[in-house]
Amino acid sequence: MSKEIRDLYEERLGRYQATIALEKTDRMPVATGSNYFAEVYSGNTNQETIYDSEKWLKAEEIFIRDFPEVDVLRNNRIWAPLYDAVGCKTYKLPGRDLPSKTQFQFVEEEYMKADEYDILINDPVEFMMDRFLPRVLGDMAEPGSTRCRMAFLKGGMAQMMMAQVMRNRSIYLQEKLGMPQPMTGAFVAPFDVLADAMRGLRGILLDIYRQPDKVLEACDVIVHEIAHFALSTADPLKRYPIFVPTHKACFLSPKQFETFYWPSFKKTLEILINAGYTVRAYLEGDWGHHWHHFLELPKGKLILDIDNQGDIFKAYETLGKHQCLAGGIPDSMFILGTPQEMKERVKLLCETVGKEGGFIINGGCNIPYDTKPENYRAMIDAIIEYGTYDSSYKCKPKVAEPGSVEVEALNKQRMVTPWEKKLEELGNIMGEEDLIRRPWEMLESMGYNWMWQWVM
Image 1 (cartoon, rainbow, N blue to C red):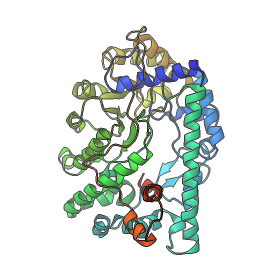
Image 2 (cartoon, one colour):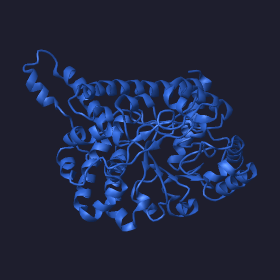
Image 3 (cartoon, helix red, strand yellow):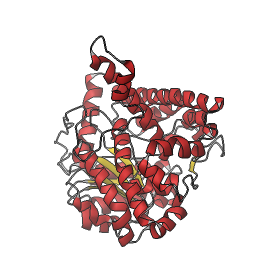
Image 4 (cartoon, rainbow, N blue to C red):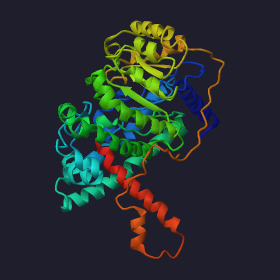
């Protein structure tokens, strides 16, 4: 990496990190979490982006060179061959199930039965292997079959290939283009694990009336499973926030939210924060009744994306001095508005919500596919004009202690075959035990966490 690119990378990352921490910056960052517009700006179809990693990276390079003021970039999050390798049913993909220029879609079904809570609670491995995965992954529909065993092999190899795609992409963007990531690693709230991929919205809304204690008990179990998954996928250098989309909170009353959603979500957030990370949360839908709960968490540890249905000004009144906020531009303005309308909206946001920093101008959790290039350019130009605080100030990245941190509230990572059992099978170890144990436990953890990615 040249000095020029390194300085650019550090300036961008430092600006982003300082904004999340509610600290001084030279200007407001251009730091969208999900920039779907960047996927199609180069002319790629949606199918090409998710299937061809070289075309995906080329699209990002074109976008960065045309919009160099952007501070962090994330667009696509899917490498489709992984989903094909196991016959994943929870997504319809462009070019496969949908027209090639269509966005991927999540398919919500009842993949967990109402009477299976005790299995999930008492033995998550049995539930995931014998119930959930055979229903969600079509190639594993017949456990024990040759096709099922092959799917596990392909799924593991595809996971490693996807990890390499993501790693190579991140290194290229950093070292060749000076571009950081807005987040690395992901999870969903424990209640959403149940309500998205397991029971579905209809099922979970019935369960909170018919068997509320089971829902709460399952959420408490999922806290530790999903926290380990998040930490296994996070940036080991702790430069970037961990991502969490929130899906079902907007369907809950304040009382339901406080009972079923928030306690386990808060526990998960606290575990990740205590492990040394920040978190970027997409507050999808209208979270207006729930915003105040984020005051219960440490200051400057979250970036909260306010969706189109939320009121960015009211969110600022509640949270603006405590957590970083993002949003403020309706998706319709990117698609149907004019550059002048965009400029006026950005000016208003900079003079109100963003006047003291700790704010990132964005759409409703994303920049839409159908954004007009001239409107996106107008947004950036207006941010530079109205969102500059002190152009002489130089932003530098934060230095975090790399490596894992033991968090008292987090249960030990589950393993299908713990080292103690493997050691008993091996008998007398002739050499240094730790040299055998460490890779064994690493691979056990990787395999275990692989199961949980399918709830995303």
